[in-house]
Figure 1 (cartoon, rainbow, N blue to C red):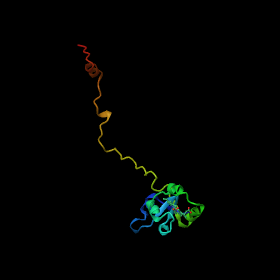
Figure 2: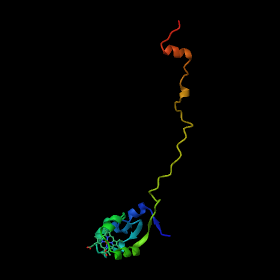
Figure 3: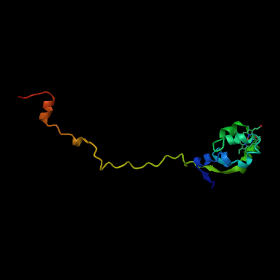
Figure 4: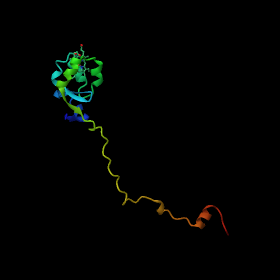
Length: 124
Ligand code: HEM
């Protein structure tokens, strides 16, 4: 099975400051650090996509089938599909058992008489 890398981990390998240069192409992760000087399209182009998904750019460049085959030798793994994109685990809501929140039971119960008073009706 392939090594899986989280997007957060891949994005750090952007080729800057002496860091390795990794690219994502079609869900696979490639370490092109040693290929920068040899890439016919130039190292700058690869660095531009360091730590990012370069699938569209790779396809747009109209690479030959030889280039597609070259990809294999730089592959180091695949993008972890669940990785950092996963939703954070929901925490239980805090218990309000001890909190003094006003509830309807705190309100004084209106008696039938009071109800009559408040409606403006007087029997005397
Ligand atoms: C591991 C990834 C890559 C490999 C192995 C690779 C390999 C190659 C190879 C072998 C060529 C020579 C022409 C051919 O055979 O198609 C080439 C040309 C080219 N590549 Fe890449 N490439 C990679 C990534 C990229 C990316 C991400 C881009 C764009 C951002 C890119 C842009 C180009 C361009 C524009 C050329 C044409 C250069 C010219 O003809 O002047 N390549 N690449």
